[in-house]
Every structure is written in structure tokens, then in C-alpha cells.
Amino acid sequence: MADGADIVEYLKQYIGTPYAWGEETPEKGFDCSGLMQWGFKKFGIELPRVTYDQINEGTPIGMKGLRPGDLVFFDTAAKAGPDHVGIYMGGGKMLHTPRPGKAVEIADITKGYYADLFMGGRRIDGVQSVGANPSDIEEAPKMSSEELASNYGWSYGFLNSIPEIKGLFDQAVSGTWTADKFQAELRESKWWQETSDTRRQAQVMKNTDPATWTASVQAQILSIRQLAAEIGAAIPESKIKKFAEQSIELGLDEGGMRNMLGQYVTFTKDGTLLGQAGMHEYTMKQYAYSQGIRLDKQSIKNQAQLVVRGLATTQDYESQIREQAKSMFPGYADRLDAGMSMREVASPYIQEMSSAFGLPDTSIDIMDPLIKSALNGLNKEGKPTGTSLSDFQVQLRNDNRWKSTAKAQDQTLTAGLAVLRDMGLR
Image 1 (cartoon, helix red, strand yellow):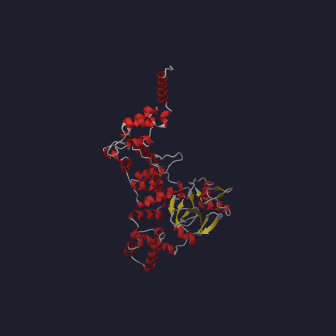
Image 2 (cartoon, rainbow, N blue to C red):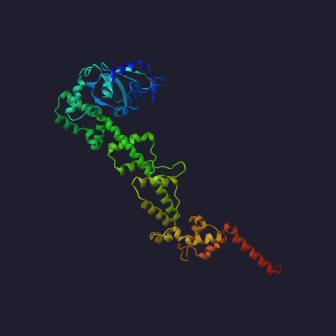
Image 3 (cartoon, rainbow, N blue to C red):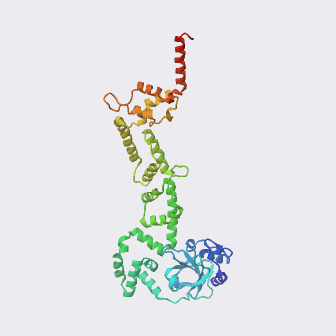
């Protein structure tokens, strides 16, 4: 067993060492959790690297039970959970390294800044305080507030974290309200009426059980990563923790998560969508191609986002594309409504062009000027019923592409030989 006072005495030699975020050695400097890890390691005790994990170690200790060598935790970032740690020295003091621009120092935790932000202590396994009293911190008025908060069914840390509720609680303390009166007034508060039960529970957990809250957030982050990969969303790393916290506070199910994540569906560097969004992109492009409709990238992304968010379906967009095709080719509206595609309608023209130009039929687009003109050809009554195949063949032979084909050149040569024969030259 290590004596907590010995660990404190060892770490006192680093007073004045500059704060350095992410560092844990005297040469480079320390951040708050790095200093703790360094000190305990010298006594054969391994601590996790970061504050959010260190608070899960050992046994929880309240302010009145602190002994030298106990870790003490604080919420310094406005309800973000335990984000700062120091080691209790005795006499209401702690040793810690506070923030950039500062150095390892001693601070009072019984009043002022750190007293208000105290979240709890932890006695690490393998550490004892030889000959120490249960606590050398005298009971302060704030302790009676904690006890009163407990009598009201809430933790003091939580009641103190919301300005409106803190004011209400201060009134209860000064007025010695009963628990029933405090609960009745609490339910009349703006915070209570505008905050869902799920969000209230999350806020309570965050402020009273930071270890469980942290574990819940980490589990939610994993779920978010998996769902994001499934639907093809690229949520920035800088936003994923906040996203996880919000989803817990709002009690989002998978549908709600999809709705929020779908906003982060975007193209990769090679210009494609991933996951379910990528599958929709492929389906949409294929259907639009079959109907002679061209979609720009922004439209594709917007539509894919709505589908993975559950705000639209693939069928919705097929219907929109079909309506566009009917507008472009009004003479075939009944066939499109019956389930045909414009590519199927245009198949005779495509086959004629393929044969005439010596091209694969898959390389011929419905939007080719000849195909589009043939589809919208008018009959004698002026209705768009399509050009006859014989007229279409004439149009093909008047196209410059026909003149460069081997078939056209053969026909020209044959015609030339026939003229020579007629002239008696061959």
C-alpha cells in the first residue's frame, strides 16, 4: 500500500512545472490528468490517462471524507462533466496543474471557484492515508445545502448547475421549505415545463453520476459511428461527442438519429456517395438515365439525404423523374404511367442508330439530338407520336456521323463504281 501523503510529497517537487496539454512528463510538462498519472505510477499504481476515465477508478469520496492522496474532480466547463483533476493534500488544499499559461500549483478547494465546481473525490485502490483523521475539512454551510438537496430528492451539484433551479433552491434553503413545497415549486419552473423528462434525466445523470454519463456517451458514440457508416454520413470528429450527448438528452431512436445524421451525407473525394446513400445514388441515376433525365450532383445529394433521413422514399423520386419525362415527351405519358421507361420507348430508334453508326446501343443516350427529335416527331395531326423508322433512317444518313462510317464509305464507293460502269469506263 502507498501512503497518500507520500504521493503528495513526491508531486510537490513539480510545483512550477508549466501546463502542457496532452503531456505527462516533467521534461515536456503536465496537463491535470497527466500529472496524476505520473505521480501514482512512481508508487506502482497505474491510472488511466484522462480525467473522464480516472473518475471511474477507486471508491467515491465526498468533500467531508477527503484524505491526503485522494483524487478530487471538478466541472470547469459549464456542465461538461468532470474535466479537471487534482490530488488532495490535506488542510482543504489540492495540488494540480490548472490550464494553459499556468503551472503546477496549490489551490484551496473549500471556498471560491473550486468549491463551487467540486464534483467528488476518489480514493484509488492501493492508496492509504496513514494516521489521518476521516477528514480535516470542517463542515461548511454548503454541506447542509447538500444534505437539504438530498432531502429534496436531488443532488446539490445538479441543482447548482441550472441558474433558475439554483435560485429556487436558494429560496428553499433560506425559507426552510418542506420537500413537498420545493417539488411543487420546481414543477412550476420554466426549466421543468420546457424540458422533456428524457432530457431532465440526462441532465441529472450528467451532474450526479458522471462516470455513468461518460459511459453512456461513449456507447452512443459507437452507435453513431456504426449508423453513420451504414447510411454513408461523414460526421466531423469535432461534432460527434456533442451529437452523442444531444441524442441521449433528446431520447432519439434510430429514426431520429438517421434524421440528424442524414444531414452529413456528402460526396467523397472521388465524387461518390457511400453506404445506403450511395445505393440510392446508383438507383436514382439508373432510373433517371432510363427516362432520359439528367440530374446534377447537388440534386442527387439532396435527394439521397432525404431518403436516408426517412423524409422521402426512392419511389417518391422515381415519381418525380417520371413526371419530368412526361413533360419532355408528352406523347408517351400513357406508356410511362403504365410502367415503361423512355429508353424502352426509344429502343427502335436506338437500334437503328446503333446499326447505322456501328455503335454499341448502350453508348447511345436518349438525349442524343437525333433520338430526342425522333421521339418528339409529329404526325399529320401535329401530335407528338414519333418519327417513322423510314424517315429516321433518312435523318441518320444526313448526319455527319454517318458519313464517317465504313458502311457509308462502302455505299459511296459502290455508287461511284456504278456510275463508272454506266459511263463505260469499267
